Image 1 (tube, rainbow, N blue to C red):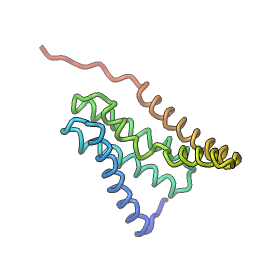
Image 2: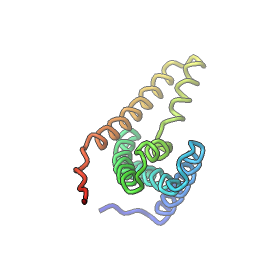
Image 3: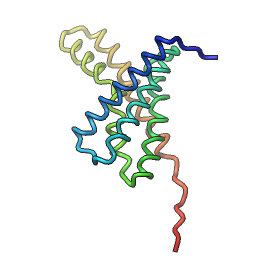
Length: 152
């Protein structure tokens, strides 16, 4: 049985709201259709929530990223069908919180500073997260959709 303390639940809720706000901002910056903005925010917030929950439960960042991107991608497919919008509208903005931008930055920073050991360490962990995201997205998007039934 998994038990979370009140402070952990509060932290998860705060992270959910902040991730939704960040994703919404990114969706506005990418000029997503206005009607899809709340859904974009929900997708990003949900992905980050799952990621943070996995990290709290002790998973490493690559495993947590993989487990977070799977429900995120499922949500993007569902919302794309419901709103008759391309999957990329929700996927590009929703994956924003999970992209390892800090890892890429620190890899380049340590490389420029001449600290090759730290650059390599950060680069490998960043690469693992990027591969986990790509694999999770590919797994979900490779599942075929059921045929549509047309009336009349």
